[in-house]
Length: 327
Image (cartoon, rainbow, N blue to C red):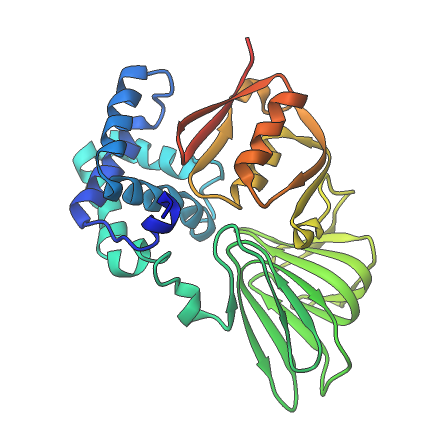
């Protein structure tokens, strides 16, 4: 049994979770402290529960960024926690974060053991998964990584609610009412065709790849979105987006297809499909790349980057990867 499958059947104790949180706070901003990283790697290798706890704490970054709109992406959640530690003292900051993780250890830390989506949504995927479903009217859904969806079909309506993540909809036959996709930022109506809805913290992106979709917002006329167009919707208004630097629906085929995309944006996209931290030095964040990348193994995907860009991969642990400029 490999480490990943073994960890799926572990639930670390609250004491071990606290140790992992403490290591997270210590390591933040200490990229060049090799002695500290050697001590951390020794702790990580000492027991399988340490690895499991570290994996769970790493995944908190994604959860915090989706819950708290004020926190930017890419590890900044823990930067904010570190700032809290400086103001409150490390023990108090540790206590606050431990309360978030440990008090709900049966639910939060074990969400990979018994995923919350199983009891909180009609259809769901975990991190790195994508799955397809066919609804009663023939509508087809494709769920991207870490996505949760509910459906409410009755004699009067066909409603799909995106609770979290990203959804590809291929409209089926006409039903008793319009096919509606609801998210926290707006309501979309698809009569026919194919479209992608991606919900993020402060906005939702709608991309129509075939057909036509209507955007409904409060106190505003419906907006028609044609094939090839993408809109950003924030609950108050919808803005037409320029051409995207990434194919919005390629993930349904297990791909990331980029067009002159910034490296830091690319890594943020890849990080959605794996656990832990993935980032790069600010000096190389603006490097651009175009190409087709397979999502089935993100480590193999990352190994391609040094072949096309002046970068090297630095694996501090299995779940902490940074890219640095080559000398």
